Length: 362
Image (spheres, rainbow, N blue to C red):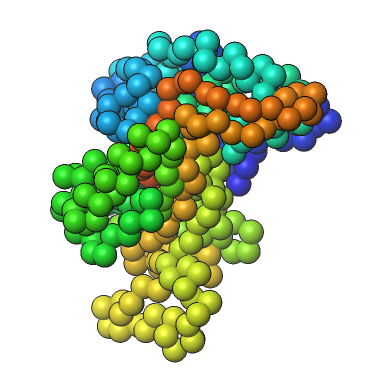
């Protein structure tokens, strides 16, 4: 599922995602800007810069109490692939300019590594890399994914497919009920308002301590037709897991009953079939790597933000012990700004597999 430009030795560099619908992201957190090139999008789909406003606003920093105070308008500029308001079938290039990068607090990272971040691994791989704000490993890169997801959604909307992400756990507080009609009333998009209030109390406490929190986000895709996915290596669940795991803060993915399936018997975990379809959905809408037409349900484990306002033990680039104290602008948690990112990655997978499926059924 992954292709990309060639690096030294002809090995694929891994900046491109998809097969029928491909997305290449580029840019760094504190560079001129970031963006995406989408190829394989069908022609004659309506697309304009205003289409990106709502989704980009959901991910944009500086809006919530627990967000980074970095202020970015995140306006998407369409450079190619659209003419007279319609896609042309040629590559769509999207640019998002960085307007409020402050690199000074990151100067210390010229010599020190941040625990929990990509700095050490990038140094070992590349030696020379853009350390400012995390560079390519920054969550800023995900803005390009959200923009690409808007294009993918243009393919899915006519099919009746919707993708919704919401918080089911944050800082150890779990949602005990799911009411998607109330999630917009929660600052964390938690569908259990009582749990949301407890989450906020924990968030306030950790913010005052200069610490961060992780959580679990559930992603629900409805209206997905049966038949999407490929046998063996390109299974739909495998590709969804890869897509979601490619988001930097995600450390685990489960689909349907997930890890709970290991504790069940076959009679408990199998989904009976009735005249109206599946009676239950332990499989999460995917069997044999192919969508069944039932709701697709997956969960992502999101780690705490690694950049925190507390002293941390680390090493310098010469391997000497050191103490790191950061003064930059950081989120307390990737939740809820990660929601549109996860939705976008699911949309990209479903759109890609729909276009692949069409080559078989058309």
